[in-house]
Length: 131
Image (tube, rainbow, N blue to C red; front, side):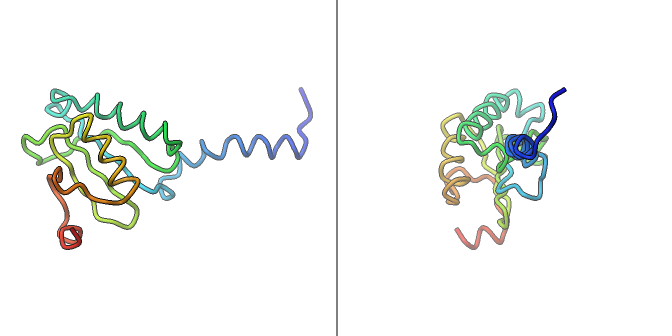
């Protein structure tokens, strides 16, 4: 086995930092939750999850933005639903999300921090006052 040098250790650390960052939830800039309940899946939530995940990965933000599958309760027929939680901001839920809307959510809300009010299904009172 090869002897590890200081340089080799530093190179190894530099390669692994992004993977370690992925596992630390407190360091995330944003959480994107795709509603994957039974109705959400029937309405195309798996495809929306895939689109969002691929876009985040393509932006090189995999360690900074978490894309999560969860069952989002009490949202009626507005499936598929995507919830965006930006660091320090109130959660915003978007309903009836299509592939096009999912891309808009990433570009406008997640990247530029501008809520897309025309697609908002549910928003907290605090965030509502700001819109």
